[in-house]
Image 1: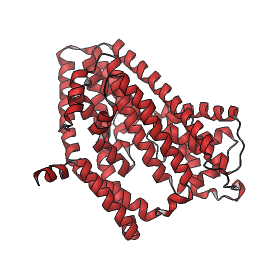
Image 2 (image 1 turned 90 degrees about the horizontal axis):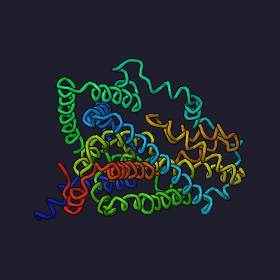
Image 3 (image 1 turned 180 degrees about the horizontal axis):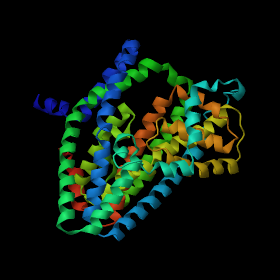
Image 4 (image 1 turned 180 degrees about the vertical axis):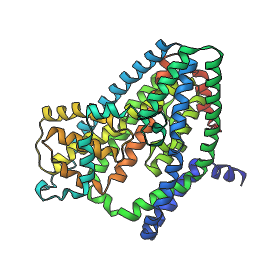
Length: 424
């Protein structure tokens, strides 16, 4: 019994049980399952309300304690190059798989007969996204507006400016401000620990809503598309991310086991943001220096959406196949080039996948944007895969860059992964 009690005390076991109960509710009482959606939304809102101060504090403290701005620039440059390379690989793998499996072939959808009203909100948002509006949108109206109505990019900009200022200022005054922000962070992380006790409820409610609203039968109508996305995601995680992790000298499966709680929470809530605070804590406990974690992980949430890249490449070609839109390899490589740019502008945007995909299809003019309607019914299931891949991709990126910078305690990391003990 003590062993069972200890097992049931693990958050990931509680989350898994919550998801199973949620699936049963969605199947047996679908209307009740749909009514549980506010519980899932409420859990995510609880986490999001403390994301801005966590990201701000982590980046500021990391940069201030790193000291040399040259080190900050070097790490930032390495991170951006790494993100771009991994994003390209994700897009290419997605293109290869969707061409081999042909999930949209044979659907013979007449694009002119599709009612585009259901995606009008996404296409309108897509037209608003451009290089200049995106860049100007990074700058908040006021210092505080970034935390109230702004996006993650605005918070990161303010944090980088303050971190650089504290690094240049130095002396007792800068140290006092840095220590004060660090102490505030510890209080916020304690709030996170309290909120995470609700993770089983949030994940279970999310699964109950998904199955209750769309039904299991929804999966079968577009099963090949789902299989293509999930197979691609698994292959990318195991082969590409696994290879990166093994190059650091750490066992990949033990690494995944270490983050199992966060993976299950993301799978249930479809939000990688829900576990960002815990990811920061666990990466630091793994042996990554606070400065690297504070710089790379938040940036990864904006620039290193591996799962989103896989989704975008597969979804774009699927719509073309379903509407009998012929695309040669040159056309598909053109789409890949556009996606490399448009995928970077989706951070902090509601319906980011649809907005980015709509922006890409609008740019290419060859694939009917109204074809996005075909994806609406299963977007929740597609989102589960891309959120989990994004989570794993960002954690691997942080460890890899920390290793390359000599900012990873490899012995400590091996001890932590071998012990299977979760940090408090």
